[in-house]
Image (cartoon, rainbow, N blue to C red; front, side):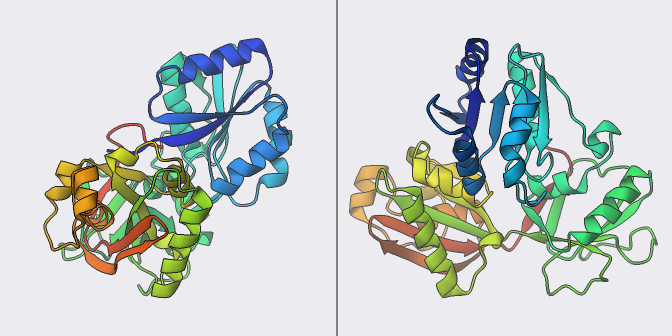
Length: 352
């Protein structure tokens, strides 16, 4: 199951507050961080950008634009920003529509309260396959962003692109009409010359103009005492990554046991890393095959003798242990490198 996420919400009138409260009344997937009246709007938004949390403004678009303008830096890294009128007629994703998931979030909010999502990104407006949205949903990062515009331009021009996978992977769903897939170990695809995009790792040789989609390969299993703050968890994770020579951008997910569903530090850590927060029941963790260091105290408390390593292995679907169970100041961590992949052409449900 997927863990909860934070969303920052600001309103400016009583009607806006009523709408925000109606939205959050039964929205179990998200935890609202509501801006207090005495809180600086600029500082509230800046903190959201720092931790990469989505921002929803219930009010005029101009207020939202003026607030976030100094914070905008990178379309692949900025927080998703949305604005909704206080009557809930329309909701507009202003920033980070694809890679940040603002478009998907707008559709979900619209479905919940009856607002019309005003999507403006060209691929969505024209009903085209969006390669950057495909990357976000499947845990792929953009390796050479200069090629993204060229590939998206071909798709918008109704031209076919050749996408080549150099990693062992399964693909589910219908291949988009203007995409030709060449898989590792499969027979020859349609002869289109050099690929427009490659799903693989940096060492994969590819022409400069070829878009590279690099799988995020590290499943990070974590456990902690109740109330360990985000900053302490972040420092612990970054220390272990540095010791192993691993890169934060290769993290695929943060994983833990379902009893940590509401743990603020872990929720914030996953959003800071821009990855899903995956949760498993003790029974699911117990079914993970392999040998794991066990703790009788953890077993009595949680229902399984090991949280972090079993969670990492479950999230990675097996894989190679890059860092075994490591403990420090009430925190535990394990890193497993995923070795097999599954990609979906279309989402099974609305994803954030």
